[in-house]
Length: 263
Image 1 (tube, rainbow, N blue to C red):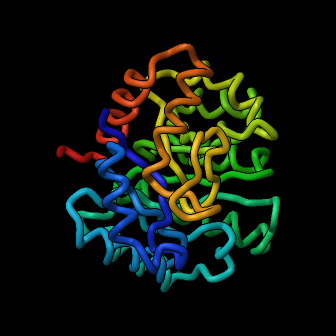
Image 2 (cartoon, one colour):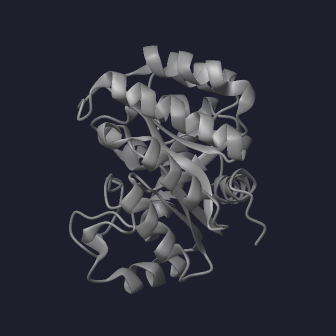
């Protein structure tokens, strides 16, 4: 079974000591495509630098809402330049996070709108983040939708209403290890069957969101990594009544189509 991890923070410092081993374990687990997440100009540049070293690594370029206060005309220019590289397959991570409010909300909205405009200009997919901000996130996406190509709502953890709002806008839905969490992922388990097979994408969001349904300890205690993606597939199979093979195969094909990767 071939798998694609469409959201992994492989440049995070928690991978600095064993990154090559992490990559090897991922490939042994069938994860033969990884998209590294850019969350600022420096992290996007680092993701691109790493992606250039391996044929099965690609990346995004964007500014996370947590860093929206750093957004400027200069950083937008930097993102445009990064996005000209063939390894950069989407704009993002961008969106709104009203849960932590690490950046003022008006600045979050401005950075989000400008990055959606960049995605539309370049006709690149957009990798989106939304937490406790659906009431503002939805109208912004809806306003821009006709100019955009593909969108994925990364690490979806929302309500039934939110899910169907995004599906109505032809968004893809990214599912993480949140669905494997018996404490807080039960609603997502119930909702998963409503995601059309051709709209489903899977991701670890490593090093975070370690799947809690594992029957063995992870290679590094408390740290998620791409090799653990099959546990998300397993929970999706249990939640939807589909086979692990069908979920893995469909999400792999979806990822290649979404990010326009031919290999």
